[in-house]
Length: 241
Image 1: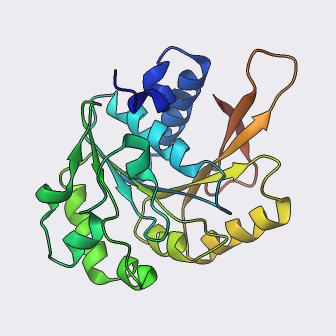
Image 2: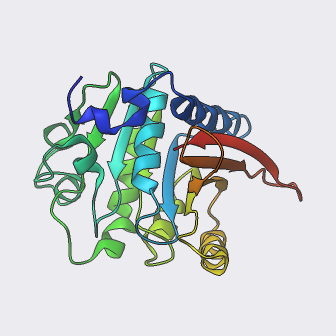
């Protein structure tokens, strides 16, 4: 195993409670797929540093382990981090494909994880929102649907910029990451409302960096499954970190 992949808990400790918890989140997402196709999923948060890139990377790996063809796409065109998780080049990526500077095959990265591909950001553009909302971007995502079982898009924090809301309009589902003791309740409510205002299908939330006392693990994630059309909330424990 490379030192790079050791950073990803789903690979480093596949039998750990943490990895098992990500598999629990994976199962919840699969059940969300019963009534509506859940192929393009974006992950966002309220603010920087809540762990959305870590969460989406582990989820992508978890789905790839099911022998599903998975693409992890860098949709944060302002502060990209996916390439750092895998220590791969970010010279060419999404922006180059959309500008016709390179084709998809020249930019996509295969990884040491079987079935998992990565498309990084490429050159950071001066107009991220315009690029993400363009017809060319939407057409590109639709083309990718033909080749991949799942497409996970890492997006900027919705509480900071509107990009995640834009991407949510052509995603099948959105996962919301909340950093415990990092994002206050009001900020989380505002962020959730912004997603709802654009019609985002919020399929669940991950409470990240939750410190639990009196056990062998320092941090816990909890996944809350949101079922549309129901007044109640089906709360479900999902991950340890």
